[in-house]
Every structure is written in structure tokens, then in C-alpha cells.
Image (cartoon, rainbow, N blue to C red):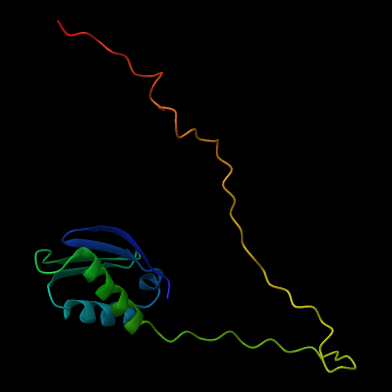
Length: 135
């Protein structure tokens, strides 16, 4: 289930859920479930913005605790994930010892940060600040 907490402050949480733009049945089920949660005071769903805004009594429940309850509700109401159709297997090319001779491949995504080096012993504002004497 794809979703992202876009904004969270005490008393208000906004979550982007792409499924809200696609499934009206999901919207009504999610709204009913979230409205039934303790301490929730208002629920607004905007399908065009793919978001739900929940206001709650922040003096009764913390923001992380409410976020956790909302995440659980999103998962609970989500439609079952359809498994992709199984690809047809190519005939195995087994060797004399019974092991497959086809190589196994795995895709790995890697992100590399290439920013400038930082000198932690140097004051980054040292050359940009000035001192003025106040008379």
C-alpha cells in the first residue's frame, strides 16, 4: 500500500494516498474507520489531491501515536494486493550434479552522494560574519 505522511503537527496530520483518487469505495471505508478512532475530531478526504487530513485531540494522544493508528487504518482498509502473474519458467538446464546452470541475477539500486567535502573543524560562517561596535 502506497502512502506518505506529508505534514504532521500536534492536532493535524495530512497523508497522501494515491489510491484515494482511484477507489471511491476505499475512500468511504477509510473515512468511516478513521472517524471511529479515539480522539479524532474531523476527517477530510480530497480525492483530487490524493490526501486525507485528520484533526485530533493532541492533548489526549501524541502525534506519533496518532500517526501509527492512521497507518494501521490505511493498511486495514486497503484492497488485497494482487500478485503479479507468475512468469512462465524456462526449461531448466540442469547439469550432471542436478544444479541449474542458469545464473541468478539480482537488481540493486544504489545512491551515491557526491557533495563537497566538509571540514568540521572550520566555522562555516567565519568569513561571512562581521562584528560591529555599539556605542
